[in-house]
Length: 221
Image 1 (cartoon, rainbow, N blue to C red):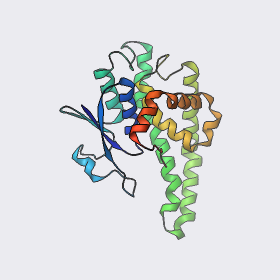
Image 2: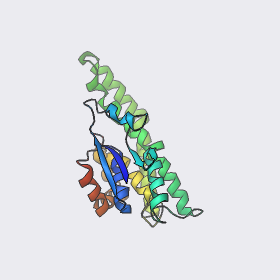
Image 3: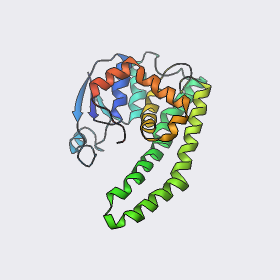
Image 4: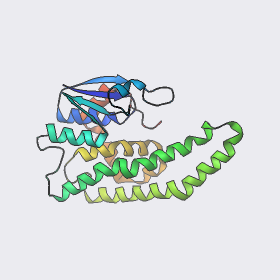
């Protein structure tokens, strides 16, 4: 039996979704964020970094969303959720499995951090913090994120899903940053392909079952 060490409002929601798509039995061990929004120390008993997602499958312990999704597809997919090796679709699949957390998510996280900076410093420092946050967004984060969104909109103009014509684990991996962007970025309203992608994934029965089992899902609040 696979155990998903599930932290509320986290990337581990993707793992529940993948398991629902696969139809593989699993159990959930739940962890709640601290007031600081950090994961509780008890997760370190499962993996030294104390972060989520983590799964245990027999004597195996795996962390990192992309690594877990690839493992589940290879072990339980039976040819589903990952394009065949050597195909153009497989290249797209591999790229977006890494791009989601390697390129897009760091920018979105930095934007979140800078956006919250003024409220996290003493009152007398807030004007300076606001100026720093505004400058970072104007000169670095805003232009970079706009460029990434345009790139992704173009990619979904070429294919229905990120890897190709078929839904894959790459779409599950891309879901977290794009749902976060859809929830927070006004730019998203002007990106019909990306908006349609988020609507499609959230309409999938397996996605809905995963949310029901994982609990309330608020991304990057």
